[in-house]
Amino acid sequence: MDKILSVKQLKVSFRTYGGESNVLRGVSFHLDKGETLAIVGESGSGKSVTAKAIMKLLPKKTSFVNKGEVIFGNKNLLELGEREMQKIRGSEISMVFQDPMTSLNPTMTIGKQIMEGLRVHQPLSKKEAFIKAVELLEMVGIPNAVDRMKEYPHQFSGGMRQRVVVAIAIACSPKILIADEPTTALDVTIQAQILDLMKNLQQQLQTAIIIITHDLGVVANMAQRVAVMYAGEIIEIGTVDEIFYEPKHPYTWGLLESMPKLHEKQDEPLIPISGSPPDLSQLPEGCPFALRCPYAMKVCHKFVPEPTIVSKGHYASCWLLDQRAANVERIGVV
Image (cartoon, rainbow, N blue to C red):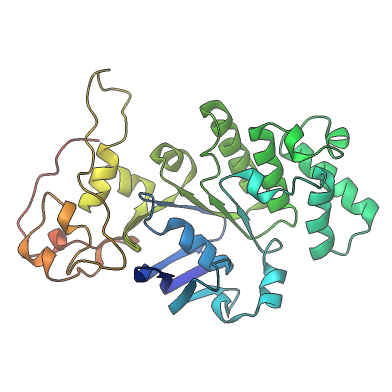
């Protein structure tokens, strides 16, 4: 498939009171046209920072890009000025954030907020923008769209607000939609509705999606490929089947083992990943997962492993994949 986005060796640092924190340390991946790529990992692994770096939405006072490229349409987005990025945001690359109330203006009607983006990026009259906004609300499943155009965000439920945010994001039929934990604040039933909505819209609009989540159930239902992040790096990437059924990195094993399984007995305990992620301002020598890894060898504490090709498109960064490493049996079964 054709690549629509390529992220190459992206490195981002934050200025903190404790010193410089390297929150992204050489992140590389690509996104194909029309596909869904899931980025998973624990909180603090760098998922949201990656998304915001692509959109150039990181705070300028406290963060900076050390190195890397974000190639979209033969342009490196990291080299574009704010005015050029404003033309791309919303029209070609859109983003859905975790909490819809932080995305919606409480003092403006829903209709006005949808129309605003339409008129900025498209040569539409006020009447044409209104008609288009109504169509968008209907497309995302909001009934009585004409009447609800006049209402404010607080008059909508959490699930409806998230539908509005999705409507705003797809208003200009973007080529890429980045969804950052889009269902975290919603109950299980509404989560399923929002995910189904995104899948249906993707089929209609042929939009490529990057979905950021820590919910592996979401990944199984939405994505074609999965990138597993840990301590600011992608430590494994592959298709959904490869990650779920043939994972190669101990961290990926740990994520899968900590997920509840329907076939287990009710009192069957989950297997957590012991320890905590490392301090990114004072990373230990060697593999950043070594201190938590039950399979760690001496080399893991001294040298950072390079990505190893498992199969076409499936990579993992682990010394266990080295030909000289002993074979180990993975603890537990998915």
